[in-house]
Length: 326
Image (cartoon, rainbow, N blue to C red; front, side, top):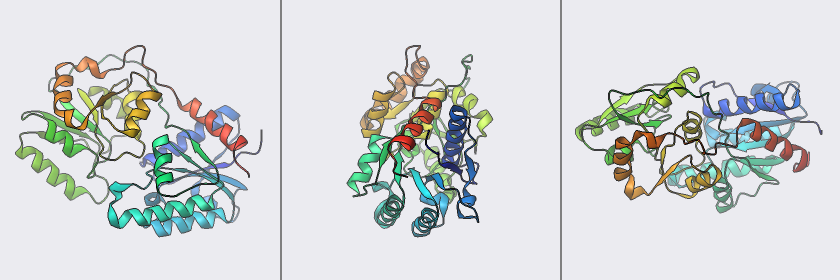
């Protein structure tokens, strides 16, 4: 096997991209028997690795898109670099931020030997933005199914959206689609800078008769149990890049309601039987139906949950050893 890259892991332990990077490093090490995980800070240290792979979203690497691109360019000047893109630029970034983020990702792609995205949907976003990496791989986010457990019984039915709260994540669409007297669980806390948005959302929902419960950050060891405890899981983003929350619902044995779109159709094709595709104008009816039949929101025995984490590791290994001109 050709020499493999060091697998850089960022310091923010709660960030989904950090978790994805560490999970991949663990799986690749298990597959190869080679210690590869590296603190991301070492890429700019006195002795950088000859080759490296990092997971990139601009907000994780610096305070601005321009600074984040500059950091990766400095790394790529010192080590042969491949990158996994997360949160690829798209319309939901807004007219001010989208051009800056697009330029940032274009600079990172130009500096890297190759780029991985987590869906054909994301690859299309890059193409639409005119970003053409030297080598492009598509490796879906993995699902790691949790061991089976009895289904909990809920006294107070609820509908839940998983992950950090921020405008555009789908909480508002779900609240608007719920009947008065229904409970909505925010299975997570506010994204940084969106605390006031969450307070305003909670007040607006209450005015419509929808009670909002905010759990705050859920530790990894409790996440699967919390995902199993809700009555109806739903993924209602207005704009998808890729969705770690969708993979988590599936890992917990749930079959969430998801808004129909290019990304969710791709995921439904990839993992048959793991999602309920719902048209945006049919969300209220779908939520009412799922609340009346919560059993429909659990995976059936024939649902296809792969690719799993070991499949993801193998896909990266094939890409690094076959597609990259180191």
